[in-house]
Image (spheres, rainbow, N blue to C red):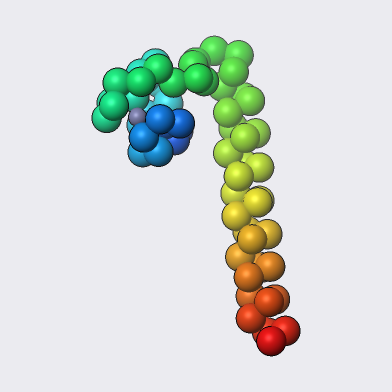
Amino acid sequence: MNDFQICPNCGRRTPEENLRCIFCGDRLPVGRGTLGSFRFGRGRAIFIIVALLVVFFFLRLYMR
Ligand SMILES: [Zn+2]
């Protein structure tokens, strides 16, 4: 099972097992190994932030 991470340089999804972005060739800040669990936590945090933004957006729409 391959997961993806977002390249900080070009913003595209690249397989997390890669050390370099497959699109722009830039080095990825998060490699494999012990940082893998950290990446999972970051992904969950981003998901939560996006969910909160969506809720906030809908609240503003309904408040108006
Ligand atoms: Zn890239």
